[in-house]
Length: 167
Image (cartoon, rainbow, N blue to C red):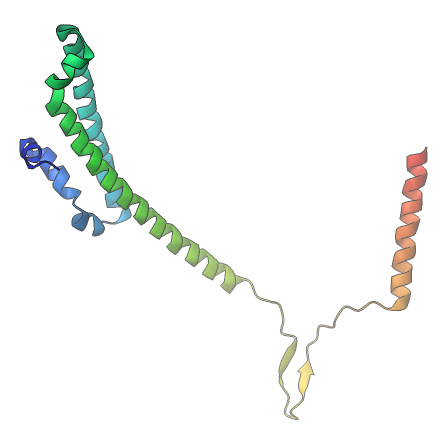
């Protein structure tokens, strides 16, 4: 940024610009960054309004936008300063939000993994005799009679549905 322009800022405005120094921004947490972002945005909006009002008044008095452009240069430069400061703060807010989001996501995943289990173990610890003891839960296996019965039941349901559809 232009040193002459920075020297022309009021003390309050200069302090706000100094607060947005990258070294200072890295030390702020997300809430402090959001508060700074809000203050810089308000200051930028204020100077934007001043610039626009001055420019529109100059157009009427001078008789054209091109001629009025040079007369409002300082206000336009202040807007550009706060625009660049706002961009710096916005980038830092974005980085802090991304970091917080990743940390929160990692916590949720860790909590979900800790809360869910794979069920009871398939085999318990080795018995005194050295052979594994099977768990109480048995594997679900279908016998031949069960397979035929299930197929017959499905076919019967399909026949009933076909008869209903034919009506």
